[in-house]
Length: 380
Image 1 (spheres, helix red, strand yellow):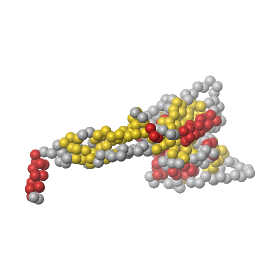
Image 2 (cartoon, one colour):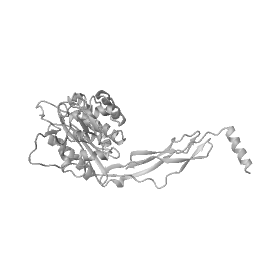
Image 3 (cartoon, helix red, strand yellow):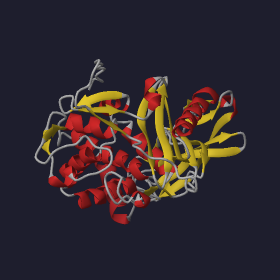
Image 4 (cartoon, one colour):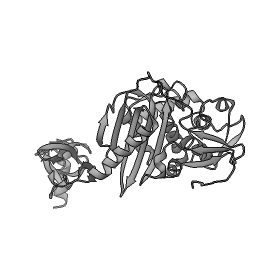
């Protein structure tokens, strides 16, 4: 998907769809400020303020709508060229919209543009009804996916967050997890990084309010907006040299601060931290003894060693050590833990990776022992 950069002197009958709308922050409205910066590959939290405090996130719920639709495209159940028909329900949406008419057909490609760039509620409804069958069932799918992603403090009630925005509850940490998953879908990046486009044959202009897409190095998305119960928010991600940081900021009193704070957090990640895979010990045991088994030893398997995020210059403080049991008792199942490789920073353990049996070992009994003896005698 290429971002169209169309400029003309005069726009005739062009409707502009933007995220913030004509909202103003009430002078007596108090918001819960929360923010987080994570590194994508390991999910490490670099910085946070109230990052696990449940708050209304309103229209940020559309990020989950995009994810569920993206899964359908990725699996082949939907194509970007597919044309979907607008229902009367989708046409009834208020707030940000691209003014879809009942029975009007629009491609999935244009629906993604409308939701991601223009925050369009009617376009989100079309996607939700296609993926979930009904808007209510789609909300169930949203919550099921949230649980699957480990978004422990999240509850969605609808696909757009414009309605009942106080009931779209999540946390800065949970939304960052959601965006980490979104970043895995490469075909979405063009939508998330396009600041201006058109749909419906040029009849609706889309302008993103995530202004960082215009000038922040390595930006990959995601969304900025405003809801009455949340205030201004910005959820942004950027990738440089294979490292991705995601910042989520909620509860701000003005748009500029939300975006500048997200930028500050990402700048901090890139300038002050480094991401690397810690080195393994020189010799990792290939097997461990088994007592009472058909075999005397069982091969070992080391789990995946994840990357870590540290302040720049701190890599030399990382060490590793092996902790291993003397033996396992039969029967042994594949995956039974025999020990672990521990990774430490100074004298403090950061994390450990299990050493496990790579195959089963049955318990020895008289019958099995006799079979072994007879086989040896026959081959003597």
